[in-house]
Amino acid sequence: MSGGERRLLGRWGEAVAARELRRRGWSILAAGWQCRFGEIDLIAQDGRYICFVEVKLRRSAGFAQAREFVDRRKQERLRISAELFLAENPTELQPRFDVVEIYAPAGTATTDPEIHILENAF
Image (cartoon, rainbow, N blue to C red; front, side, top):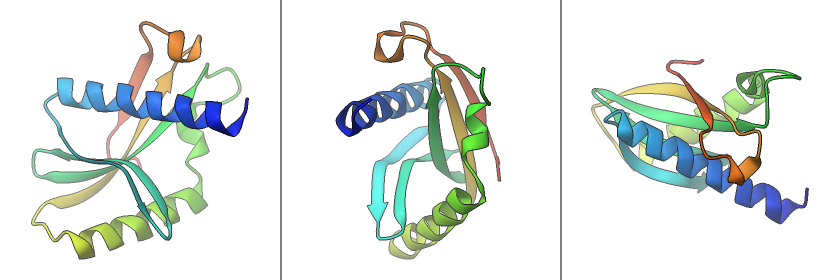
């Protein structure tokens, strides 16, 4: 898979995750927010929480669950990026880190992807 195809698939997964979060009543505050430390896939509000969401898309959990790819190094980059976001966008909301797992066996052609939302994942 080329880099362009990978990015397209990643954006598709983020759109699927955002749609599911909205369906559950969350507000999407930002998508693909970037800083010098990395990118936060989605920033959302769930009640009194500001959620920094990492979206992981896999074809299946056969090798490993999608959440397992959010390793310690990725978690640290997300924390630092979230701190920068909060410094630039002060809020009274409580921060939380979530992971959305999406399993799409046919990639973007998957009509009904399996979605798991792991609140307070790390």
